[in-house]
Image (cartoon, rainbow, N blue to C red; front, top):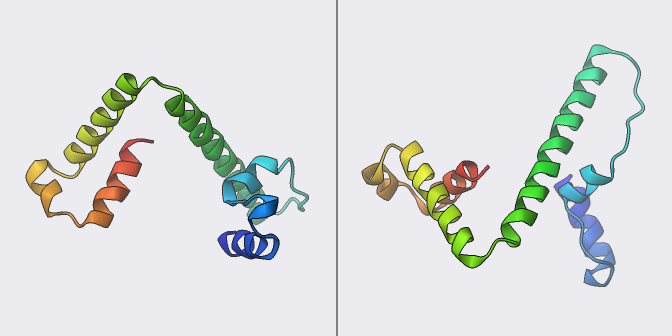
Length: 109
């Protein structure tokens, strides 16, 4: 999906707006397949992905509309949770920066 979106964005340029995988799955309304087990499993994966993306977008919308004092409280709580999941502050300090970003993202979901 990322390759397709990247090619689309490069071809049309920023004048047409950019797309990402989330915009694709939001627009997906149905899938035409046979009734094989693998096709049913694929449809269930798409449904799960669509549900997850919908929740992420709704959550981001709520966060963007929070007043700064509530947003900072939420972000501090998410960071505390990420530190706890990593094994405490000592373990957190030993993580690479990329790992910290991944754990922050996971704890905020």
